[in-house]
Length: 625
Image (cartoon, rainbow, N blue to C red):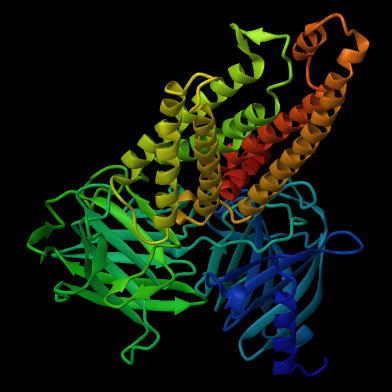
Protein backbone atom coordinates (compact mmCIF):
# COMPACT_ATOMS: atom_id res chain seq x y z
CA UNK A 1 0.00 0.00 0.00
CA UNK A 2 1.03 3.62 -0.56
CA UNK A 3 2.76 5.46 2.24
CA UNK A 4 0.37 7.59 4.32
CA UNK A 5 1.55 10.99 5.53
CA UNK A 6 0.27 13.46 8.09
CA UNK A 7 -0.61 15.75 5.20
CA UNK A 8 -2.89 13.03 3.79
CA UNK A 9 -4.80 12.80 7.05
CA UNK A 10 -5.02 16.59 7.42
CA UNK A 11 -6.29 16.90 3.84
CA UNK A 12 -8.93 14.24 4.47
CA UNK A 13 -10.04 16.02 7.63
CA UNK A 14 -10.40 19.37 5.85
CA UNK A 15 -12.40 17.67 3.08
CA UNK A 16 -14.72 16.24 5.74
CA UNK A 17 -15.43 19.72 7.17
CA UNK A 18 -15.92 21.31 3.73
CA UNK A 19 -19.61 21.71 2.93
CA UNK A 20 -20.94 20.94 6.42
CA UNK A 21 -24.42 22.41 6.61
CA UNK A 22 -24.67 23.11 2.88
CA UNK A 23 -23.91 19.84 1.10
CA UNK A 24 -23.33 17.54 4.08
CA UNK A 25 -24.98 16.63 7.36
CA UNK A 26 -22.27 16.80 10.03
CA UNK A 27 -21.87 16.12 13.73
CA UNK A 28 -18.71 16.52 15.79
CA UNK A 29 -17.30 16.30 19.30
CA UNK A 30 -16.72 18.38 21.37
CA UNK A 31 -19.55 20.89 20.99
CA UNK A 32 -18.76 23.67 18.51
CA UNK A 33 -15.73 21.95 16.99
CA UNK A 34 -17.18 21.95 13.48
CA UNK A 35 -17.05 25.76 13.41
CA UNK A 36 -13.37 25.76 14.37
CA UNK A 37 -12.52 22.60 12.36
CA UNK A 38 -10.90 21.06 15.41
CA UNK A 39 -12.99 18.01 16.33
CA UNK A 40 -11.72 15.06 18.33
CA UNK A 41 -14.20 13.00 16.33
CA UNK A 42 -16.51 13.91 13.46
CA UNK A 43 -18.76 12.40 10.82
CA UNK A 44 -20.18 13.84 7.59
CA UNK A 45 -22.95 12.28 5.51
CA UNK A 46 -23.71 13.34 1.94
CA UNK A 47 -25.69 11.98 -1.00
CA UNK A 48 -23.78 10.01 -3.62
CA UNK A 49 -24.35 10.85 -7.27
CA UNK A 50 -25.02 7.21 -8.14
CA UNK A 51 -27.42 6.65 -5.25
CA UNK A 52 -26.84 5.92 -1.60
CA UNK A 53 -24.70 7.98 0.75
CA UNK A 54 -21.03 8.73 1.38
CA UNK A 55 -19.96 8.72 5.02
CA UNK A 56 -16.68 10.33 6.10
CA UNK A 57 -15.46 9.67 9.66
CA UNK A 58 -12.41 10.75 11.61
CA UNK A 59 -11.24 10.20 15.19
CA UNK A 60 -8.04 11.36 16.92
CA UNK A 61 -6.07 9.27 19.41
CA UNK A 62 -8.53 6.42 18.90
CA UNK A 63 -8.75 2.86 17.70
CA UNK A 64 -12.21 3.32 16.22
CA UNK A 65 -14.83 5.87 15.26
CA UNK A 66 -18.43 4.87 14.50
CA UNK A 67 -21.72 6.41 13.41
CA UNK A 68 -25.19 5.09 14.22
CA UNK A 69 -28.53 5.78 12.56
CA UNK A 70 -31.06 5.82 15.39
CA UNK A 71 -34.73 6.49 16.09
CA UNK A 72 -33.79 8.42 19.24
CA UNK A 73 -30.80 9.92 21.04
CA UNK A 74 -29.78 6.77 22.94
CA UNK A 75 -28.26 3.44 21.98
CA UNK A 76 -30.60 0.61 21.10
CA UNK A 77 -31.95 -0.79 17.84
CA UNK A 78 -29.48 1.22 15.72
CA UNK A 79 -27.73 0.68 12.40
CA UNK A 80 -24.00 1.29 13.01
CA UNK A 81 -21.03 1.69 10.66
CA UNK A 82 -17.62 1.27 12.33
CA UNK A 83 -14.28 2.61 11.15
CA UNK A 84 -11.69 0.50 13.01
CA UNK A 85 -7.89 0.38 13.13
CA UNK A 86 -6.67 -3.18 13.35
CA UNK A 87 -3.03 -4.22 13.55
CA UNK A 88 -2.45 -5.52 10.04
CA UNK A 89 -1.13 -4.08 6.80
CA UNK A 90 -4.28 -4.00 4.69
CA UNK A 91 -5.52 -0.46 4.07
CA UNK A 92 -3.12 0.83 6.72
CA UNK A 93 -4.88 -1.38 9.26
CA UNK A 94 -8.29 0.32 8.75
CA UNK A 95 -11.43 -1.79 8.29
CA UNK A 96 -15.12 -0.94 8.09
CA UNK A 97 -17.85 -3.06 9.68
CA UNK A 98 -21.60 -2.97 10.11
CA UNK A 99 -22.92 -3.64 13.59
CA UNK A 100 -26.16 -3.51 15.55
CA UNK A 101 -26.84 -1.75 18.84
CA UNK A 102 -28.88 -4.25 20.83
CA UNK A 103 -32.19 -2.77 22.06
CA UNK A 104 -32.24 -2.07 25.79
CA UNK A 105 -28.83 -3.64 26.37
CA UNK A 106 -26.41 -0.77 25.62
CA UNK A 107 -24.12 -3.19 23.81
CA UNK A 108 -23.00 -3.63 20.24
CA UNK A 109 -22.70 -6.70 18.01
CA UNK A 110 -21.29 -7.01 14.51
CA UNK A 111 -23.51 -8.46 11.83
CA UNK A 112 -22.68 -11.76 10.18
CA UNK A 113 -23.69 -10.36 6.80
CA UNK A 114 -21.39 -7.42 6.09
CA UNK A 115 -23.42 -6.02 3.19
CA UNK A 116 -25.05 -2.76 2.14
CA UNK A 117 -21.83 -0.73 2.44
CA UNK A 118 -18.25 -0.66 1.16
CA UNK A 119 -15.01 0.89 2.40
CA UNK A 120 -13.78 3.41 -0.16
CA UNK A 121 -10.72 4.66 1.72
CA UNK A 122 -9.11 4.05 5.09
CA UNK A 123 -6.18 5.87 6.69
CA UNK A 124 -4.41 5.54 10.05
CA UNK A 125 -1.41 7.51 11.28
CA UNK A 126 -0.24 8.66 14.71
CA UNK A 127 -3.47 7.63 16.44
CA UNK A 128 -5.81 9.25 13.90
CA UNK A 129 -8.34 7.02 12.12
CA UNK A 130 -10.10 8.19 8.96
CA UNK A 131 -12.32 6.32 6.55
CA UNK A 132 -14.77 6.95 3.75
CA UNK A 133 -17.65 4.50 3.34
CA UNK A 134 -20.38 4.17 0.74
CA UNK A 135 -23.70 3.21 2.32
CA UNK A 136 -26.75 1.93 0.45
CA UNK A 137 -29.91 4.02 0.79
CA UNK A 138 -31.93 1.05 2.10
CA UNK A 139 -30.61 -1.75 4.32
CA UNK A 140 -32.26 -4.28 6.64
CA UNK A 141 -30.83 -5.30 10.00
CA UNK A 142 -32.49 -7.72 12.42
CA UNK A 143 -35.73 -7.53 10.41
CA UNK A 144 -35.71 -3.74 10.70
CA UNK A 145 -35.48 -1.68 7.52
CA UNK A 146 -33.42 1.53 7.47
CA UNK A 147 -34.40 3.82 4.60
CA UNK A 148 -32.02 6.80 4.61
CA UNK A 149 -33.89 8.47 1.73
CA UNK A 150 -37.32 8.60 3.34
CA UNK A 151 -36.90 8.16 7.11
CA UNK A 152 -35.31 10.76 9.41
CA UNK A 153 -32.78 9.51 11.97
CA UNK A 154 -30.70 10.79 14.84
CA UNK A 155 -26.96 10.50 14.24
CA UNK A 156 -24.95 8.88 17.04
CA UNK A 157 -21.20 9.51 16.92
CA UNK A 158 -18.84 7.45 19.10
CA UNK A 159 -15.07 7.01 19.35
CA UNK A 160 -12.79 5.13 21.72
CA UNK A 161 -9.18 4.11 22.32
CA UNK A 162 -9.67 0.34 22.67
CA UNK A 163 -11.29 -2.59 20.90
CA UNK A 164 -12.92 -5.79 22.05
CA UNK A 165 -12.87 -9.06 20.14
CA UNK A 166 -15.26 -8.54 17.21
CA UNK A 167 -16.56 -5.38 18.80
CA UNK A 168 -15.70 -1.77 19.56
CA UNK A 169 -14.69 -0.79 23.08
CA UNK A 170 -15.91 1.88 25.49
CA UNK A 171 -16.66 5.31 24.02
CA UNK A 172 -14.05 7.11 26.11
CA UNK A 173 -13.02 9.63 23.44
CA UNK A 174 -16.36 10.83 22.12
CA UNK A 175 -20.06 10.11 22.33
CA UNK A 176 -22.60 12.61 21.07
CA UNK A 177 -26.07 12.45 19.59
CA UNK A 178 -27.83 14.89 17.31
CA UNK A 179 -30.53 16.80 19.14
CA UNK A 180 -33.24 15.84 16.63
CA UNK A 181 -34.00 13.59 13.70
CA UNK A 182 -33.35 14.56 10.11
CA UNK A 183 -33.35 13.13 6.64
CA UNK A 184 -29.81 12.44 5.51
CA UNK A 185 -30.47 14.53 2.39
CA UNK A 186 -31.51 17.48 4.57
CA UNK A 187 -28.03 18.97 4.68
CA UNK A 188 -27.19 20.84 7.84
CA UNK A 189 -24.80 20.81 10.72
CA UNK A 190 -26.29 18.46 13.26
CA UNK A 191 -26.21 20.11 16.66
CA UNK A 192 -24.90 17.89 19.39
CA UNK A 193 -26.51 18.34 22.82
CA UNK A 194 -24.69 20.84 25.01
CA UNK A 195 -23.51 19.15 28.24
CA UNK A 196 -24.34 22.37 30.11
CA UNK A 197 -27.99 21.29 30.08
CA UNK A 198 -27.36 17.82 31.52
CA UNK A 199 -29.26 17.58 34.79
CA UNK A 200 -31.27 20.75 34.22
CA UNK A 201 -34.52 20.79 36.22
CA UNK A 202 -33.52 17.41 37.61
CA UNK A 203 -30.46 17.88 39.81
CA UNK A 204 -29.89 21.59 39.24
CA UNK A 205 -31.96 24.73 38.71
CA UNK A 206 -31.76 26.11 35.16
CA UNK A 207 -33.18 29.31 33.70
CA UNK A 208 -32.62 30.58 30.17
CA UNK A 209 -33.62 33.02 27.45
CA UNK A 210 -35.77 32.72 25.42
CA UNK A 211 -38.19 31.11 27.83
CA UNK A 212 -38.47 27.57 26.42
CA UNK A 213 -34.82 27.19 25.45
CA UNK A 214 -33.74 24.94 28.33
CA UNK A 215 -36.02 22.18 27.04
CA UNK A 216 -34.63 22.58 23.52
CA UNK A 217 -31.05 23.02 24.84
CA UNK A 218 -30.48 26.07 22.68
CA UNK A 219 -30.45 29.25 24.81
CA UNK A 220 -29.04 32.64 23.91
CA UNK A 221 -28.22 32.96 27.61
CA UNK A 222 -28.64 30.43 30.40
CA UNK A 223 -27.74 30.02 34.07
CA UNK A 224 -27.81 27.10 36.48
CA UNK A 225 -27.61 26.95 40.28
CA UNK A 226 -26.59 24.07 42.56
CA UNK A 227 -26.01 23.94 46.30
CA UNK A 228 -22.57 22.73 47.37
CA UNK A 229 -22.47 22.66 51.16
CA UNK A 230 -22.17 26.22 52.47
CA UNK A 231 -21.67 27.69 49.02
CA UNK A 232 -23.79 27.90 45.92
CA UNK A 233 -22.35 27.22 42.47
CA UNK A 234 -23.56 29.28 39.53
CA UNK A 235 -22.88 28.35 35.89
CA UNK A 236 -23.64 30.89 33.18
CA UNK A 237 -23.13 31.09 29.44
CA UNK A 238 -24.28 33.28 26.56
CA UNK A 239 -23.83 33.50 22.81
CA UNK A 240 -22.36 36.54 21.06
CA UNK A 241 -21.97 38.31 24.38
CA UNK A 242 -19.39 40.21 26.41
CA UNK A 243 -21.10 39.40 29.69
CA UNK A 244 -23.84 37.28 31.21
CA UNK A 245 -25.38 38.07 34.60
CA UNK A 246 -27.97 36.65 37.00
CA UNK A 247 -29.89 38.82 39.46
CA UNK A 248 -31.62 37.73 42.67
CA UNK A 249 -34.69 39.94 43.12
CA UNK A 250 -37.77 40.35 45.28
CA UNK A 251 -39.85 41.23 42.21
CA UNK A 252 -39.73 40.95 38.40
CA UNK A 253 -38.13 44.36 37.92
CA UNK A 254 -34.62 45.73 38.17
CA UNK A 255 -33.90 47.54 41.43
CA UNK A 256 -32.39 46.52 44.81
CA UNK A 257 -31.14 43.20 43.41
CA UNK A 258 -27.95 41.27 44.06
CA UNK A 259 -26.25 40.29 40.80
CA UNK A 260 -23.50 37.82 39.90
CA UNK A 261 -21.68 38.63 36.66
CA UNK A 262 -19.51 36.69 34.25
CA UNK A 263 -17.53 39.24 32.22
CA UNK A 264 -15.12 39.02 29.29
CA UNK A 265 -12.31 41.51 29.81
CA UNK A 266 -9.58 40.95 27.20
CA UNK A 267 -7.41 43.73 28.66
CA UNK A 268 -7.04 42.00 32.01
CA UNK A 269 -3.54 40.64 32.70
CA UNK A 270 -4.88 38.01 35.12
CA UNK A 271 -7.21 36.41 32.57
CA UNK A 272 -9.97 37.39 30.16
CA UNK A 273 -12.85 36.02 32.28
CA UNK A 274 -13.83 37.80 35.48
CA UNK A 275 -16.59 37.15 38.03
CA UNK A 276 -18.13 39.98 40.06
CA UNK A 277 -20.97 40.75 42.41
CA UNK A 278 -22.92 43.93 41.69
CA UNK A 279 -26.04 45.81 42.72
CA UNK A 280 -29.05 46.92 40.67
CA UNK A 281 -29.70 50.50 41.73
CA UNK A 282 -33.44 51.16 42.28
CA UNK A 283 -35.48 53.98 40.76
CA UNK A 284 -35.13 56.82 40.01
CA UNK A 285 -31.45 56.22 39.12
CA UNK A 286 -32.03 52.66 37.85
CA UNK A 287 -28.70 51.12 36.86
CA UNK A 288 -26.07 48.62 37.87
CA UNK A 289 -22.84 49.15 39.80
CA UNK A 290 -20.02 47.21 41.46
CA UNK A 291 -18.97 50.16 43.60
CA UNK A 292 -19.24 49.51 47.35
CA UNK A 293 -20.23 45.88 46.65
CA UNK A 294 -17.92 43.45 48.54
CA UNK A 295 -16.31 40.87 46.26
CA UNK A 296 -15.15 38.52 49.01
CA UNK A 297 -18.25 36.36 48.81
CA UNK A 298 -17.64 35.23 45.22
CA UNK A 299 -14.90 33.25 43.49
CA UNK A 300 -14.40 32.24 39.85
CA UNK A 301 -13.92 28.48 39.41
CA UNK A 302 -13.70 28.22 35.65
CA UNK A 303 -14.26 30.40 32.62
CA UNK A 304 -13.80 30.54 28.86
CA UNK A 305 -14.47 32.78 25.86
CA UNK A 306 -14.52 31.39 22.32
CA UNK A 307 -16.03 32.69 19.09
CA UNK A 308 -18.08 35.26 21.00
CA UNK A 309 -19.49 32.70 23.44
CA UNK A 310 -18.82 33.33 27.13
CA UNK A 311 -18.96 30.74 29.90
CA UNK A 312 -18.06 30.74 33.57
CA UNK A 313 -18.58 28.73 36.71
CA UNK A 314 -18.40 30.53 40.04
CA UNK A 315 -19.23 29.98 43.68
CA UNK A 316 -20.95 32.36 46.10
CA UNK A 317 -21.21 32.34 49.88
CA UNK A 318 -24.43 31.12 51.40
CA UNK A 319 -25.04 34.45 53.14
CA UNK A 320 -23.91 37.84 51.84
CA UNK A 321 -24.84 41.42 52.65
CA UNK A 322 -25.12 43.94 49.83
CA UNK A 323 -26.17 47.57 50.36
CA UNK A 324 -27.51 46.67 53.80
CA UNK A 325 -29.66 43.83 52.43
CA UNK A 326 -28.96 40.28 53.61
CA UNK A 327 -29.18 37.60 50.92
CA UNK A 328 -29.56 34.11 52.39
CA UNK A 329 -29.50 31.72 49.44
CA UNK A 330 -30.70 28.75 51.49
CA UNK A 331 -33.65 30.34 53.30
CA UNK A 332 -34.90 33.11 51.02
CA UNK A 333 -36.87 32.90 47.80
CA UNK A 334 -36.08 35.04 44.77
CA UNK A 335 -37.16 36.00 41.30
CA UNK A 336 -34.37 35.39 38.77
CA UNK A 337 -33.32 38.13 36.35
CA UNK A 338 -31.08 36.81 33.54
CA UNK A 339 -29.31 39.26 31.25
CA UNK A 340 -26.60 39.22 28.60
CA UNK A 341 -25.08 41.95 26.48
CA UNK A 342 -22.26 42.77 24.12
CA UNK A 343 -20.76 45.80 25.89
CA UNK A 344 -19.48 46.86 29.28
CA UNK A 345 -19.42 50.12 31.23
CA UNK A 346 -16.88 51.20 33.84
CA UNK A 347 -17.70 49.27 37.02
CA UNK A 348 -20.84 47.70 35.54
CA UNK A 349 -22.33 45.69 32.72
CA UNK A 350 -23.77 47.41 29.64
CA UNK A 351 -27.17 47.30 28.02
CA UNK A 352 -28.84 43.88 27.77
CA UNK A 353 -28.88 43.75 23.97
CA UNK A 354 -28.42 39.97 23.70
CA UNK A 355 -30.99 38.67 26.16
CA UNK A 356 -33.09 39.73 29.13
CA UNK A 357 -35.69 37.58 30.87
CA UNK A 358 -37.32 37.54 34.30
CA UNK A 359 -38.83 34.54 36.01
CA UNK A 360 -42.57 34.54 36.50
CA UNK A 361 -42.41 33.30 40.09
CA UNK A 362 -40.32 33.58 43.23
CA UNK A 363 -38.82 30.32 44.46
CA UNK A 364 -35.92 28.79 46.35
CA UNK A 365 -32.73 28.48 44.31
CA UNK A 366 -32.68 24.72 44.95
CA UNK A 367 -36.21 24.28 43.58
CA UNK A 368 -35.20 22.61 40.30
CA UNK A 369 -38.67 23.06 38.78
CA UNK A 370 -39.34 26.46 40.30
CA UNK A 371 -38.49 28.94 37.54
CA UNK A 372 -40.17 29.66 34.23
CA UNK A 373 -40.22 32.81 32.13
CA UNK A 374 -42.59 35.56 33.21
CA UNK A 375 -45.59 35.94 30.95
CA UNK A 376 -45.03 38.24 27.99
CA UNK A 377 -48.76 38.59 27.34
CA UNK A 378 -49.00 42.28 28.26
CA UNK A 379 -45.93 43.14 26.18
CA UNK A 380 -47.28 41.33 23.13
CA UNK A 381 -50.76 42.80 23.52
CA UNK A 382 -49.21 46.27 23.80
CA UNK A 383 -47.39 45.78 20.51
CA UNK A 384 -50.37 44.19 18.77
CA UNK A 385 -52.77 46.93 19.93
CA UNK A 386 -50.45 49.74 18.81
CA UNK A 387 -49.89 48.18 15.39
CA UNK A 388 -53.62 47.59 14.91
CA UNK A 389 -54.37 51.16 16.02
CA UNK A 390 -51.81 53.15 14.04
CA UNK A 391 -50.92 50.97 11.04
CA UNK A 392 -54.50 49.78 10.63
CA UNK A 393 -57.31 51.96 11.96
CA UNK A 394 -55.57 55.37 11.91
CA UNK A 395 -54.34 54.95 8.33
CA UNK A 396 -57.86 54.30 7.06
CA UNK A 397 -59.56 56.89 9.27
CA UNK A 398 -57.27 59.72 8.14
CA UNK A 399 -57.70 58.90 4.46
CA UNK A 400 -61.50 58.75 4.74
CA UNK A 401 -61.67 62.18 6.38
CA UNK A 402 -59.32 63.79 3.89
CA UNK A 403 -60.49 62.44 0.54
CA UNK A 404 -64.02 60.97 0.84
CA UNK A 405 -66.24 63.82 2.08
CA UNK A 406 -67.85 64.07 -1.41
CA UNK A 407 -68.27 60.31 -1.90
CA UNK A 408 -71.44 58.34 -1.06
CA UNK A 409 -73.17 61.69 -0.46
CA UNK A 410 -76.63 60.20 -1.13
CA UNK A 411 -76.16 57.56 1.59
CA UNK A 412 -75.75 57.74 5.36
CA UNK A 413 -75.26 55.62 8.48
CA UNK A 414 -77.54 56.55 11.42
CA UNK A 415 -78.10 59.95 9.86
CA UNK A 416 -74.37 60.65 9.45
CA UNK A 417 -72.36 60.84 6.25
CA UNK A 418 -70.68 57.52 5.49
CA UNK A 419 -67.18 58.99 5.57
CA UNK A 420 -67.84 60.59 8.97
CA UNK A 421 -69.42 57.49 10.50
CA UNK A 422 -66.45 55.31 9.50
CA UNK A 423 -63.93 58.01 10.43
CA UNK A 424 -65.43 58.35 13.90
CA UNK A 425 -65.56 54.57 14.42
CA UNK A 426 -61.97 54.00 13.27
CA UNK A 427 -60.55 56.86 15.32
CA UNK A 428 -62.48 55.66 18.37
CA UNK A 429 -60.78 52.27 17.88
CA UNK A 430 -57.42 54.06 17.68
CA UNK A 431 -58.13 55.82 20.97
CA UNK A 432 -59.30 52.69 22.79
CA UNK A 433 -56.45 50.49 21.52
CA UNK A 434 -53.84 53.16 22.28
CA UNK A 435 -55.06 53.80 25.81
CA UNK A 436 -55.26 50.06 26.54
CA UNK A 437 -51.80 49.49 25.07
CA UNK A 438 -50.33 52.33 27.14
CA UNK A 439 -51.78 50.94 30.37
CA UNK A 440 -50.46 47.47 29.55
CA UNK A 441 -46.88 48.58 28.95
CA UNK A 442 -46.84 50.66 32.16
CA UNK A 443 -47.91 47.57 34.12
CA UNK A 444 -45.36 45.41 32.26
CA UNK A 445 -42.26 47.56 32.79
CA UNK A 446 -43.24 48.84 36.22
CA UNK A 447 -41.77 52.32 35.72
CA UNK A 448 -39.66 54.42 33.39
CA UNK A 449 -37.10 52.73 31.14
CA UNK A 450 -33.42 53.28 30.43
CA UNK A 451 -30.89 52.75 27.66
CA UNK A 452 -32.03 52.28 24.03
CA UNK A 453 -35.65 52.01 25.17
CA UNK A 454 -35.83 55.70 26.07
CA UNK A 455 -36.46 57.13 22.52
CA UNK A 456 -39.23 54.59 21.96
CA UNK A 457 -40.78 55.44 25.34
CA UNK A 458 -40.57 59.22 24.78
CA UNK A 459 -42.16 59.15 21.32
CA UNK A 460 -44.72 56.61 22.50
CA UNK A 461 -45.69 58.86 25.39
CA UNK A 462 -46.02 61.81 23.01
CA UNK A 463 -48.21 59.77 20.67
CA UNK A 464 -50.43 58.63 23.54
CA UNK A 465 -50.84 62.20 24.83
CA UNK A 466 -51.84 63.56 21.42
CA UNK A 467 -54.19 60.64 20.90
CA UNK A 468 -55.77 61.18 24.33
CA UNK A 469 -56.67 64.86 23.74
CA UNK A 470 -57.92 64.45 20.15
CA UNK A 471 -61.50 63.22 20.90
CA UNK A 472 -61.95 65.89 23.60
CA UNK A 473 -61.01 68.53 21.03
CA UNK A 474 -63.67 67.06 18.74
CA UNK A 475 -66.31 67.25 21.50
CA UNK A 476 -65.86 71.03 21.83
CA UNK A 477 -65.54 71.80 18.12
CA UNK A 478 -67.35 74.99 16.99
CA UNK A 479 -70.37 74.92 14.70
CA UNK A 480 -69.46 74.67 10.98
CA UNK A 481 -70.38 78.29 10.44
CA UNK A 482 -68.56 79.66 13.47
CA UNK A 483 -65.58 81.98 13.02
CA UNK A 484 -63.32 79.69 15.05
CA UNK A 485 -64.17 76.60 13.02
CA UNK A 486 -61.14 76.98 10.66
CA UNK A 487 -58.85 77.17 13.71
CA UNK A 488 -60.35 73.95 15.06
CA UNK A 489 -60.02 72.25 11.67
CA UNK A 490 -56.30 73.04 11.47
CA UNK A 491 -55.68 72.03 15.10
CA UNK A 492 -57.61 68.76 14.63
CA UNK A 493 -55.69 68.01 11.42
CA UNK A 494 -52.32 68.82 12.99
CA UNK A 495 -52.80 66.80 16.19
CA UNK A 496 -54.13 63.77 14.30
CA UNK A 497 -51.39 63.71 11.68
CA UNK A 498 -48.64 64.45 14.21
CA UNK A 499 -49.82 61.55 16.37
CA UNK A 500 -49.88 59.25 13.32
CA UNK A 501 -46.35 60.18 12.22
CA UNK A 502 -44.99 59.84 15.78
CA UNK A 503 -46.67 56.45 16.11
CA UNK A 504 -45.10 55.09 12.93
CA UNK A 505 -41.63 56.30 14.00
CA UNK A 506 -42.20 54.72 17.44
CA UNK A 507 -43.03 51.38 15.83
CA UNK A 508 -39.81 51.59 13.79
CA UNK A 509 -37.88 52.14 17.04
CA UNK A 510 -39.58 49.13 18.65
CA UNK A 511 -37.93 46.81 16.12
CA UNK A 512 -34.53 47.67 17.65
CA UNK A 513 -35.57 46.76 21.20
CA UNK A 514 -34.22 43.46 22.45
CA UNK A 515 -37.27 42.91 24.64
CA UNK A 516 -39.59 43.05 21.61
CA UNK A 517 -37.73 40.13 19.95
CA UNK A 518 -38.73 41.36 16.51
CA UNK A 519 -36.77 40.44 13.37
CA UNK A 520 -34.63 43.19 11.85
CA UNK A 521 -36.26 42.68 8.46
CA UNK A 522 -39.52 43.99 9.94
CA UNK A 523 -38.05 47.43 9.18
CA UNK A 524 -38.40 46.67 5.47
CA UNK A 525 -42.03 45.67 5.93
CA UNK A 526 -42.63 49.04 7.60
CA UNK A 527 -40.75 50.85 4.83
CA UNK A 528 -42.95 49.09 2.28
CA UNK A 529 -46.08 50.11 4.17
CA UNK A 530 -44.99 53.77 4.33
CA UNK A 531 -44.18 53.81 0.60
CA UNK A 532 -47.53 52.21 -0.23
CA UNK A 533 -49.40 54.67 2.01
CA UNK A 534 -47.64 57.70 0.52
CA UNK A 535 -48.35 56.53 -3.06
CA UNK A 536 -52.07 56.13 -2.23
CA UNK A 537 -52.07 59.65 -0.74
CA UNK A 538 -50.46 61.08 -3.88
CA UNK A 539 -52.90 59.30 -6.18
CA UNK A 540 -55.91 60.46 -4.16
CA UNK A 541 -54.53 64.03 -4.10
CA UNK A 542 -54.17 64.04 -7.89
CA UNK A 543 -57.61 62.51 -8.21
CA UNK A 544 -58.97 65.32 -5.99
CA UNK A 545 -57.39 68.01 -8.17
CA UNK A 546 -58.89 66.52 -11.33
CA UNK A 547 -62.24 66.15 -9.58
CA UNK A 548 -62.29 69.82 -8.52
CA UNK A 549 -61.65 70.98 -12.09
CA UNK A 550 -64.40 68.76 -13.41
CA UNK A 551 -66.81 69.99 -10.71
CA UNK A 552 -66.06 73.64 -11.55
CA UNK A 553 -66.80 73.12 -15.22
CA UNK A 554 -69.98 71.22 -14.45
CA UNK A 555 -71.33 73.93 -12.10
CA UNK A 556 -70.50 76.72 -14.58
CA UNK A 557 -72.67 75.11 -17.28
CA UNK A 558 -75.85 75.03 -15.20
CA UNK A 559 -77.08 78.57 -16.07
CA UNK A 560 -76.72 77.77 -19.75
CA UNK A 561 -78.74 74.57 -19.39
CA UNK A 562 -81.68 76.04 -17.55
CA UNK A 563 -81.64 79.78 -16.98
CA UNK A 564 -85.17 79.76 -15.50
CA UNK A 565 -84.57 77.04 -12.92
CA UNK A 566 -82.71 79.21 -10.47
CA UNK A 567 -80.64 77.12 -8.01
CA UNK A 568 -82.19 73.79 -8.74
CA UNK A 569 -79.34 72.45 -10.88
CA UNK A 570 -76.74 73.53 -8.32
CA UNK A 571 -78.79 71.95 -5.54
CA UNK A 572 -79.04 68.73 -7.49
CA UNK A 573 -75.26 68.72 -8.05
CA UNK A 574 -74.57 68.94 -4.35
CA UNK A 575 -76.45 65.66 -3.87
CA UNK A 576 -74.19 63.90 -6.34
CA UNK A 577 -70.74 62.37 -5.71
CA UNK A 578 -67.84 64.49 -6.85
CA UNK A 579 -66.44 63.42 -10.22
CA UNK A 580 -64.25 60.31 -10.42
CA UNK A 581 -65.91 58.70 -7.39
CA UNK A 582 -65.36 55.29 -8.99
CA UNK A 583 -61.60 55.82 -9.07
CA UNK A 584 -61.59 56.96 -5.43
CA UNK A 585 -63.57 53.88 -4.40
CA UNK A 586 -61.15 51.66 -6.30
CA UNK A 587 -58.16 53.26 -4.58
CA UNK A 588 -59.90 52.89 -1.21
CA UNK A 589 -60.41 49.18 -1.86
CA UNK A 590 -56.71 48.77 -2.66
CA UNK A 591 -55.79 50.73 0.47
CA UNK A 592 -58.07 48.70 2.73
CA UNK A 593 -56.76 45.38 1.41
CA UNK A 594 -53.14 46.53 1.66
CA UNK A 595 -53.50 47.95 5.17
CA UNK A 596 -55.34 44.85 6.40
CA UNK A 597 -52.64 42.58 4.97
CA UNK A 598 -49.75 44.56 6.46
CA UNK A 599 -51.49 45.00 9.82
CA UNK A 600 -52.32 41.29 10.09
CA UNK A 601 -48.76 40.29 9.22
CA UNK A 602 -47.20 42.74 11.69
CA UNK A 603 -49.57 41.68 14.48
CA UNK A 604 -48.55 38.06 13.89
CA UNK A 605 -44.86 39.06 14.06
CA UNK A 606 -45.47 40.76 17.40
CA UNK A 607 -47.66 38.09 18.96
CA UNK A 608 -45.45 35.16 17.94
CA UNK A 609 -42.10 36.87 18.60
CA UNK A 610 -39.43 35.65 18.24
CA UNK A 611 -41.00 34.79 14.91
CA UNK A 612 -38.19 32.62 13.49
CA UNK A 613 -38.26 30.38 16.55
CA UNK A 614 -42.06 30.11 16.52
CA UNK A 615 -42.01 29.34 12.79
CA UNK A 616 -39.39 26.61 13.28
CA UNK A 617 -41.48 25.06 16.08
CA UNK A 618 -44.54 25.16 13.83
CA UNK A 619 -42.64 23.40 11.03
CA UNK A 620 -41.34 20.76 13.44
CA UNK A 621 -44.88 20.18 14.68
CA UNK A 622 -46.10 19.68 11.11
CA UNK A 623 -43.27 17.24 10.36
CA UNK A 624 -44.05 15.21 13.48
CA UNK A 625 -47.74 14.83 12.57
